[in-house]
Length: 73
Image 1 (spheres, rainbow, N blue to C red):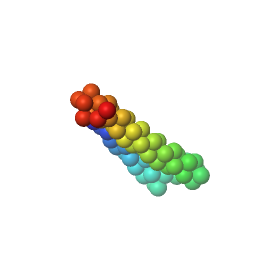
Image 2 (image 1 turned 180 degrees about the vertical axis):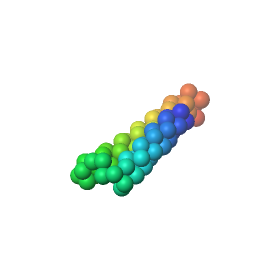
Image 3 (image 1 turned 90 degrees about the horizontal axis):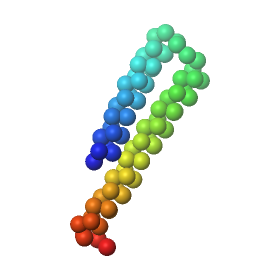
């Protein structure tokens, strides 16, 4: 469960950072459009990767707990 909380925190941080970057780009053209797209895609990939890692770890730890509790062999 701790892994999903960490993934949620990472996701929220990425959304906040991207929102600030998008607002800055919209109003002040801080960086080139190409760089903004690259940063946006990087944020998406980091967010997806963190969720996938958290899901895999949660499944693994649940299986280990069930083995310890002798629900599965």
